[in-house]
Length: 366
Image (tube, rainbow, N blue to C red; front, top):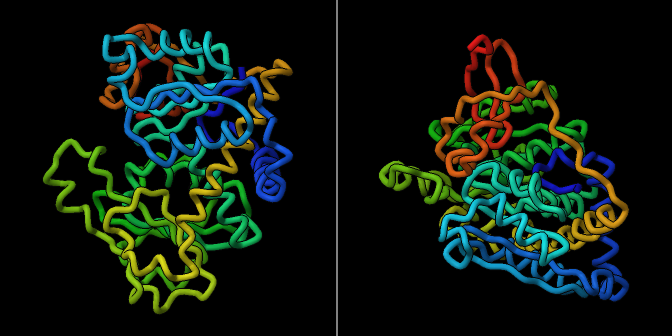
């Protein structure tokens, strides 16, 4: 069954197709009002969400379908110890498609391997958030008329910001995109993203801690929140939470057609005075997210009805009994994954967890 777990599950042609469908939905909503009549979406949200959950629900309702689900783990059998795998098997009996958000990295992938209906990753820890990336891509396309040949700045939490990782991966497949990585040292983009996305795809980039110095060169500025929930040490969060705040004054040297994006929720990182600037696009992103989720639901349900199978993970896969040491990985709670734990991107004994992408060194001779 075809699911969407990572933005790279979609080809460039498929991304362009989704953008075209989303634009058509915006222009002719009445033509899609009954497209999913009789179909049910299950929203399985194991951690808090406003925009993403309601966006999925609004998308399905506007397509003529219905919605079931829960908005926190305590409202589900997870509070009784039920595994993600079993939850996916159960919900497949009730719904035609699943949207899942989970604090454990790799949980939606596990769900997709056990569900008999399509699964959409609505965010898994600090790992991936592909449907937010779809919203970002549509916003950039509608503002710029293209997804190529531009300079995009990412500011704030680049270490735990799953939206940043997904958007960089998506933009790396379009020509002429340069990224500027703006963050404090403690929140820099992970080295595996730099190596496996920027370096391998020969994507131009530069790193800086100077927001004001970077702004004049940018076509798009992607601001992010420093996320309290990703920090194990509250003192580190308190020290970094206000590292970068975008103000009207800091935009003085920006391009007249700069597009300012933010995945929301916003806390302090964008002054409310910036909201009145015509270059502020973050509330447009919310509407664009609903449109792209409508397009995605249509695509996955159509493919399911025609029996399209999910593509398997790429790379040199290795079954190993070693447990992933990332405490945020789904393998830390889904015990049955211990014996089938797989690693990918095997290079010189260094492999990556298929679920959360954490690195590990494995001696195959053991």
